[in-house]
Length: 349
Image: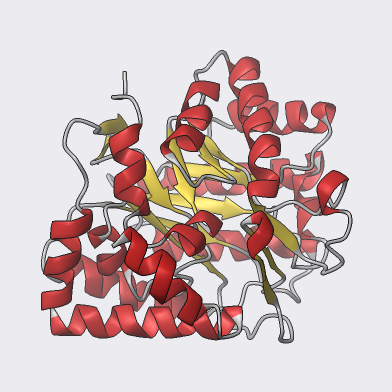
């Protein structure tokens, strides 16, 4: 299937605009799920090898390789994605109500660098739609896999009220999500990254910590809650963020989102937006190493950025990540990517 994807399917998809190709692929996976048989074929070709299980936050991951948020924003193809061998799938980013995102074109490929630039702007169908889709998955035919839900704020919500949008997202998804990821680091929503600053971050962390505590007081499960951060932070700022996450007893960090850095080999990337794929690989690994050192390896980290091979994933795991995620690499490597990575990484300790 690798050669089929590389030699035939990918060239055909790349004849289309990136966003059209993305939507076409999602439509194909939705039809595959409706038909049923193609999913059986996916499992036989791409199912996860045994012996790579990870237990984290009282969750059982069949393997440590996941699909990052952004690929399945509205939770429409969870089952087919898990059928490709991913140990977990993170859906979203979802905002309280539907929004169209930024004007098109807003997704760009750089094949020579195995890179993608996006300025999507949290386009999604809103919480009601995502909750309905995840509920349908949960009540359908059993399918092994951990589901994370990535939440964000509306574009027009002022940062002073952002914590209320995240609270809406948390409360709407907490009963369905195996974990919740809080996205304050996309570069494509104006001023969103300012939520990584000390005062607004502390307010956000406190608000969701209290919401989680309220759940447990009612006899409901504590929902693992992770903060997704940018790769472009100065060391002092990163240290402050990590300190706040630990102080508020959150469950982990996702490192990292896309970069706005265009230095070095990428100075000619004039397209604005978040750059992902190979160009962010070293930056994200460096952030993982710093977080692990700051916390003595005690704070779980999901490593994401530039992963295409088992060696790339192992680098993130060796740097201190407990789990890894892929996004841009999946576009370039295709359906068997997760299985190949899982086969090539070391057995978790």
